[in-house]
Length: 105
Image (tube, rainbow, N blue to C red):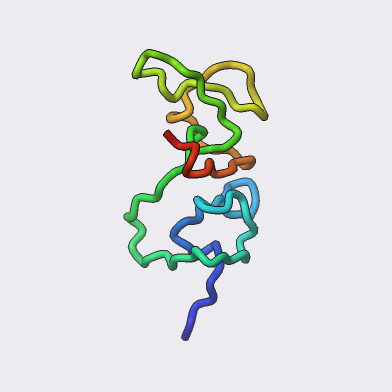
């Protein structure tokens, strides 16, 4: 029996607790029955560590240029805040848009 390909059984998707939508590493928030060409079936093992998106990986996060190495991921979200925070420690929200590879430093 062949299993239908959907984002709910994809390795790159994480269930959102608020509703049935999926937070995809590639596409952002999508419906649970959506499927894209990057679909990878989730293995049976539940112990696989997933790549968790953080604010630092989002296109809406603006990083500040700092000379201090420890503060390289400090910045603000252009949608929600004016206060500076560490983009590596905060998990991505439902408005997450993956930063293009050219912009990632």
